[in-house]
Length: 410
Ligand code: BGC
Image (cartoon, rainbow, N blue to C red; front, side):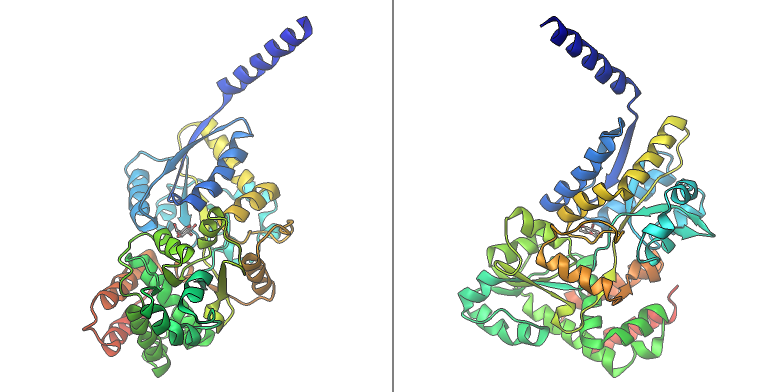
């Protein structure tokens, strides 16, 4: 008993000492859906295990709501310890203004260049040879998620590609099921448009328009077809009347919608609803037409702080996020692909395995955030949502405005 008491006293003292030295870091992000919250908790757990303390700064309303808040805090002198952005160019101006911590030393010490694949992920964090962020996942936009219940209720087979999806829509409508669940937020509609560009227009068109900023390609008949399909999608989405992406996913889970075109973060929602890929829902990469992984995703940036203890904790967090065990735990819950290929993902579900296979085959395209400035991305989002909300706007009208954005894109 005496020994037990002594041991207890010692461990309490150690825990107390640990608590004294624990450095708190506020981490902002927009991961507030059920699946997202479970995934981010893995980061918090891993960081807390280093003796530091994760102070969760979740911002509801999605990335478009969260990013302006994050940016104004950083530029306004109230920086957090770490913050999510989509990897790519969203934080470019903050880095250029010298507001972000340089991670090059830790990246070199940890061998990130050799570990992080594909190389474009770390390149998106690099400016003038220095590394300013840590990519934590690959989240492809190029998927459609299909409800087995919805198709069973409508008495038609689960579609295997976009054309079948369109053809089966009347049967769903007849049963009061919305064929396509789309949340009415600009980023969701613009993301879906990017998926259609790859499935309907092909990878070559996507590359010409997005990477080469070829305005002629944006004016081509192939591109007209993309806008025509987007206008068709608008008809298939009638009656959804929702905002948040996860509410749209929930319609697929409940079988009140046939499908949703959404990035693979949707998997987190199917998982917490205990749905099984291949049994309760199907996932078609590239709308079952053009199997591609788009290297969208998330990265963490560390604003400069005038506090050496916090700076050390920031670097510790950056390391922890790349660590193999954190990558496995986080990505399995998030539905995203890991940034390193040297880890055990045997627990991945069927959809994730499809994604890993496509990525291993080298079939990937960059995200809009990687190739366009935040300003150009914003202009495109505004235009696409205007088209979506105004059935009076013809595909020809939207195409010309779109081509002129591409012409002036940076
Ligand atoms: C992020 C995902 C997130 C999704 C919805 C995307 O921008 O990359 O991590 O789950 O937004 O919130």
